Length: 149
Image (cartoon, rainbow, N blue to C red; front, side, top):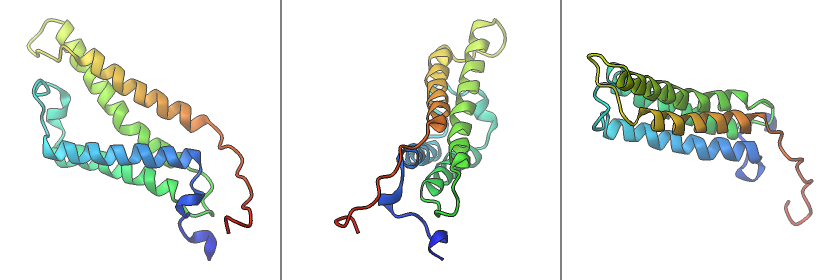
């Protein structure tokens, strides 16, 4: 039965700590999307086609999923789904900002987003960080000493 209980915070490994930290940030971003759905300059980006509850909810759901996999029961050994959840939303943002920059550079009816390349690069770095961290093995756990029990 103990194998199906969530891990205690002391048992969360380094990969799990990243899942908790990034997952928490994703949840905060999701609430930020609900609070301020269309920032100035974003009106012409593809964000305007995605309903606010979907955008905010996707950040929150993927963040909570990542945190849940950090605290997953010991019987679930793979945390890959948590890292996939962390990958989704910054990849979506990077693509939308990049497309906004392309629209800005190419003449046409859509003004695009002049800072889209910078914003896309920031989110692409988050995607790269998640991909790199997800490939790192956890350091070996030290066996508990008498003082830890």
